[in-house]
Image (cartoon, rainbow, N blue to C red; front, side, top):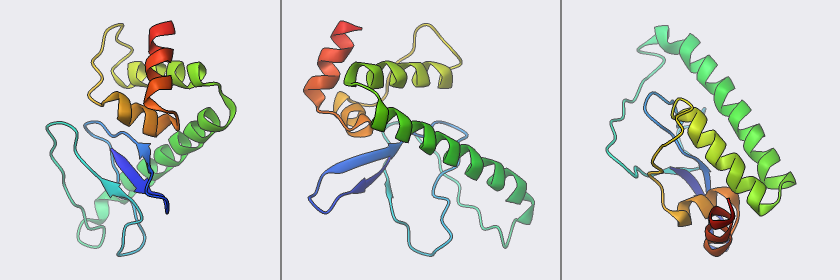
Length: 129
């Protein structure tokens, strides 16, 4: 999970990354967000100065990340709580290869922080769905 802490100490999860995803795409030496593994993880750091052949893949990943961030912003800003949870489940299904059954590796607290909801609202929404 990639997250930021607000001035009031609240955590906002910005993204969940799965195997093969690129993250930490920063133009500065200092990162503006934090990343934590919530499962078995391998990470590779790539310097574009040392490995310029990765530039096209990086550009594509940056566009994908930007598109996903825009979609997430629409979900957070314009949907009801139950619609947010449903959209989240559809996103996770899509990222799991449209499997009808999939396991969520993140906690309900993580889901709540991702969807800008309380954990109780996430639990109620999951029950209704």
